[in-house]
Image (cartoon, rainbow over the protein chains, first blue to last red):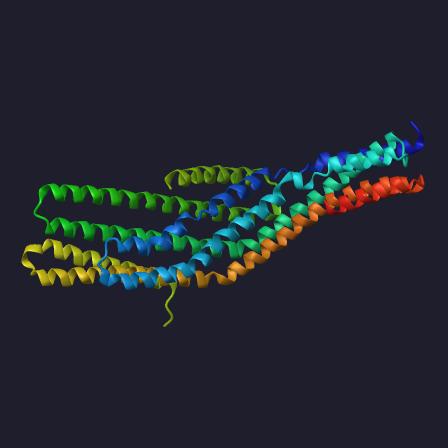
Length: 279
Length: 129
């Protein structure tokens, strides 16, 4: 071994040792949580139901009420974009968090190998030297970008948690009391409509048929209530998990934290599957 | 006093409950009411149900207003995060450009115009990757 090769080996071994001690952060749990949050938050079906609600009500209400319902529909149409923007922004934020937590973004090994090969092929250095330089470059790049990335995640979670919690809290109120309130109103409307028909009718067969229709309509509303409850749970889980990230932002690679986040990702995955199967 | 989203949601519930109570009264006393009384009560029920929907729409609007500032802050954080991702991608791009530059340097040293032109194209392509 030449003296130059020996000089090369010493820092290389030191760096390899450091990298083993530090370990490359495995943030796949955060990536997983962010990805499933991004998918499940951007669930627009309920917003569409909210906007279509006044038109559904027209089916049961007398014509004298239709102008009022048309006005409500117009107001909701204006709100639609604002509601969708909230879903989209949570989706985009989670996507960004997921990208930052993804390992492939800080893995430049292939590119560095290509650089080493180019140096060697063009006779700027011998293959042994370039191999050693490439190994050093990989460790250094990984260590630097990984530390930088962890810091960026910390900064992001720190800055975004406050506004994210408020946006989710407001959205949850809209979902629970707004979308949920609509289903209660629709239920009352259906019951008023069909019970009035029943009371006015003297035909037993007709009454039975009307009651069946009422059941069908009410079952549809119950389905919608289930999807509203599920979506509300999704928002709660996203909020709780992000709060945990914020509370532990100085130890973002802690095993306990990552295992909790992984559990949130699993729960969210299940809720997302549930909501997809409802509507 | 300014109406909040909480107040508006609460009012919408009260209108709905009133409509349901009125309906129950109408059905429970069906035989004791005249046709005109039944119709009046039914009309009031529909009006109350629509007042409830109207109040929900107002409440949603107020809730959206209340989170507007936070929405802008979240948007700013997301934009920052996207810049960070771009930076990490740029590191990879820079290494790619360096690789192509090595080839270009070798071509210049060898004084081969064709190789210089080819490698210059590669450098350009790497910088655009």
